[in-house]
Image 1 (cartoon, rainbow, N blue to C red):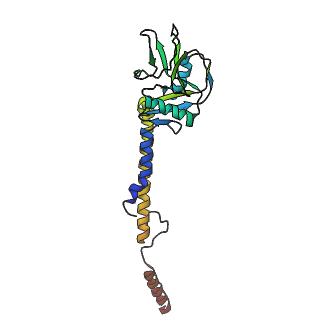
Image 2: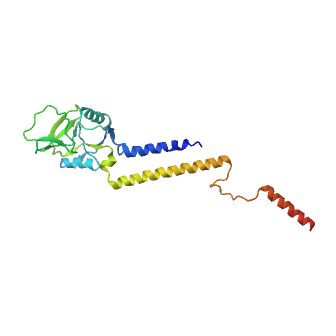
Image 3: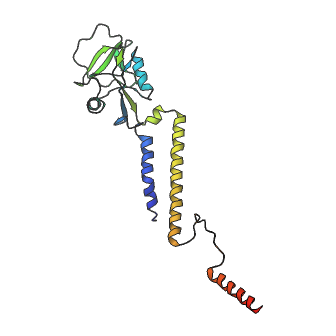
Length: 232
């Protein structure tokens, strides 16, 4: 087997390792630039927006934050084609009464907004933001909802470095390293076995005992013994 074949055997595995380290947690997530997104379709009853947020934090993420028109369009398009979300999606924001402004739960800067034209209430306490999936605009509404028809979550890449514990990262690294080492050793042993088999030499896998003498030597000894019996 040519030496170049060994690296080829490892390419799929190395690709899997790279995907495990760099990409989103699973195929249920959708990647856009440097973030991963997931829509949890389960309808749940809630007592506060914190119950909704816990749905995301339980998955190592936070409620959705949007920072430009491109990201807003991506979310809107994915909700329509893949996630089949409801008309209104709760955004991961809250109204901070200390400085009278909306802020994201994930502590990112509020650099973009897409509010629809509507009159604000006199008191915005307990006011949340919703993404209207029909128009892509945002609208203000009461945070005290009794249920939600799905939760939209977002996590930054690399997911494992930001959200997974150190022990989880260590275990994942050890598993990947062990898999690579075992694969390399298996490829080397198979290569040596095939090479020796093709060359006609006995391999370490042979179970047939080998004699120190060839067949001709055994034949000569037998003939000498027969002659000795005849003389006697």
